[in-house]
Length: 424
Length: 161
Image (cartoon, rainbow over all chains, first blue to last red; front, side):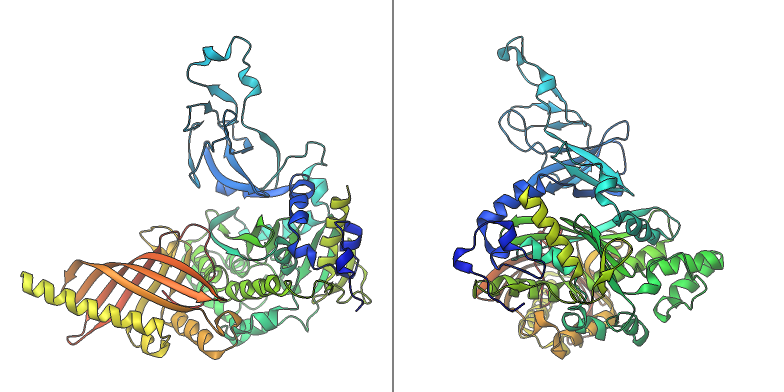
């Protein structure tokens, strides 16, 4: 396991870059590799672009990215969702620079070409100069194949890829469990934190399936909790696990009693949620619903990592966007209960702010160590990056190899998928 | 108020806010906590809102969260703040928006430069303070710092605005 990598002769051969137990340093630093990843991964697979509640109404849109490519996610008048490249078919100007909103069409600011909500070219000034055989139907915005699961909208440039549900496979069960955070209401997004970190995107991909770092990097977060909550988040000694779910996806169960939020509703309400429980009782919610909502507010006890860019991470969506070989943008999207009690959603917001985002008690420390990785790989190109933790004790779980909660099983799952896609 | 009173108030407020800025650059956080009223709110919004409690913010700190945040900075277990970025900030363009009894609402512009890992970053913000006059000085009732790109892609912060 400690053998060095022949850095001088490192090629772009995925087989040499990724072994089951280690990856090469250039995985984080090679510009050429980064360009290949855009083509072979981000253009070839399903990429998470939005949650349905971000485009709630007819005409609602929001800007997103598929890899580095700017896209518009929009709901048309029939309620169908379209994802299309934000680029006029005439001379390439973006047709929208508003982050989110509502519209009836998109118009290019340069020469006024106008597009419908489904991306079709509707009108252009002085069309007669293009001649009689100009076919508007061939000049719509470039559209991506778009499918959704449980409100999560994915898009792909690859028309030949399997249906989204097949791609998600064993991860679907965990998405279903994650959405129980609606507490009986539909899940809706409540805003997002966005921050950029000087690191390769795969450093972020790994982190969502890395419980090993939690007590070290997040010690100051743990210290800010009450004793009961601190105990809940001290999970490395518990019964948690990491499991490979296939196609690069994995789940990391940190708090097993918070996997199914509809189960064990008679469990004691944690002290930090007592005030909320009382508020809901005072509002007239029956006890069983109070318990269900309070349990949902606390979030799920697992991280679901979806290759290549999304995660259902305990109580929020974590979305990564590769910007450059050494720069990654991250969105931490808060979620809550559509039509649920205001007090519950407010507490969700405060809990999100507590850990996540540029001023959270958790994310800045994550960002620091991620940047330290990117700074570290400037040295020792021949040294491998180890992803071998727990490799010998792994056993077959429900869907794939399973290891201890602190094991690197999820990273091995992601890198196996990376290798498969880069070899195609 | 006549012009002399207004000028006097502006000067007193300016002195207070400059001393707060110096305290934050020096990271004398215990002194900073002393500037607050216990029920005061320290807020960095993402978007404008009538009620910041109902929306997601970068931070929404009551007294308890403020103290937790300072403890986190001071205890040395947070890798991003051990050491933190160093900062130099200036506040200017003070405008007194309202005076009501002992309460003064004042707005200003802020530029802050941070330095860490040999890299400098520049942040600009509109800041609105609600202050309570104590006679000789002020206490902070509310401080709302709206970064210019608060709804955009930011970096993580190891200090306070």
